[in-house]
Amino acid sequence: MTTPAQAAQLLETALRTVEGLRVYRDRGASIDPPAAIVGLPQLGWQTYCGPAPTHARFRVDLVVPADELANERLWRLIPLVAEALEAVQSATLAPVEYAASPAMFTVGQTQLPGYEIQVDFAL
Image (cartoon, rainbow, N blue to C red; front, top):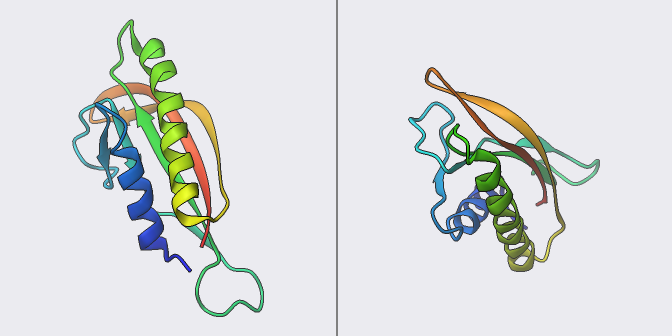
């Protein structure tokens, strides 16, 4: 059984395999894009499974610099991030599902384009 902390570490480690992508835990940190931010998960429990959570939903924000190449950077990075997430599933042998939605992120005084990726992780 995987704990939420172990799941977060697996996600962070997998995302660090994407060349040129910086990985952060703190949403308030000074972000140097291209970057992925792995936030605290939403936790859930199935009935009769005890006190430990049975699944976690992580929000991973993928952000790039706001310039004329932003779309191209995102289109290049999204398949690489998806491949990294597949590696997490292979390592845990647990179902990992994810969806990505385009979004704008505020970092300091700057709006950065990116994707909000929801990663559902069986614990």
